[in-house]
Length: 121
Length: 169
Image (tube, rainbow over all chains, first blue to last red; front, side, top):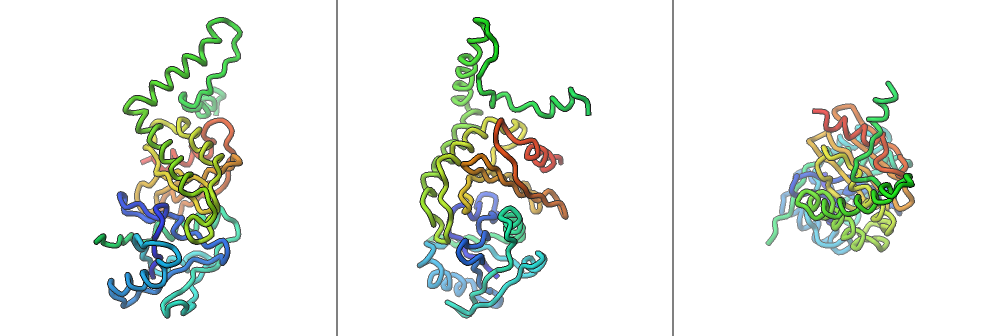
C-alpha cells in the first residue's frame, strides 16, 4: 500500500527515506489515509493522487510504499478499507493513544517504507 | 560510577555555556563578554555556519511555514515561537561528535531534530515550546525507545545516552 507525500517534513530525498510525520494520524480522525497499490500501474497511482489527494492536501511530491504486514506487526494496529473517495482508499487505524508511542509507531512505518518520488515534468 | 566519571558524563557542550559567572572579581565579570565574542566568531566560521547558523535558519524557516493550524492539510498543530526558540538554544548543546541533524516540523506542534544512520537506526527529538522534549528511536533490530525529557540546561542526559548508542558503531 502507499501513503502519498506532500509536505517537506514527510520525506528526505537526499537520504531517500520517509520521515515519521508522513504516518502521524490525523488529529481529527485518529487514522492515516493510504491507498492499496497491489497490481496498480505507476501511472494509475499518480492519477489517483492527482484526483483524490492533491485537491485537499496540495501537490504530490512522492509516495511511501510499504507492505501492510508492517502495520500488523504493531499490536492493535490494522488497515481498514473504506472504499471512499476511491475504491482503493484505506485507513491505518488502532494507533496508540499515547502521543509518544504513536510517534514511535509512525517512525517504524516510515522506516519500513520505500520512498518513491514523483518525476518532475 | 565515580563522582568524577558521573561529572564527565554530565558535562555539557562548552558551546551551551550561558555565559553567566558566579565570580566576583574583575576578571570573572569579563568571562561572559569574552564567551559571547568567542561564540559570535565561532558562528561566523565555516564550522559554526554549518553547525549553528544554517540549522538556525532552517528552524525559523520551519516556524514561519508552520505557525498556523492545519499547515499540512491534515489538522497539524501550529508550531509556537517558543518551540523554535528552544530548538535554537539546543543547537550549541549538541555534542560535537554528532553530525548536524535533519530539521523539520512535527505535526503535533514541535520542531524535530532527527539523526538517520541506516534502516532501523534513527533517532528523533521533538522540541515543544513549553520545554518538553519527546523522543523516539530505533537503535537496532528489536531495540526501540520513546519517552519524554525536560529541557532546562543543555541536552537531557537520556537523549545524549540514546544518541551515543545510535552512533556507537
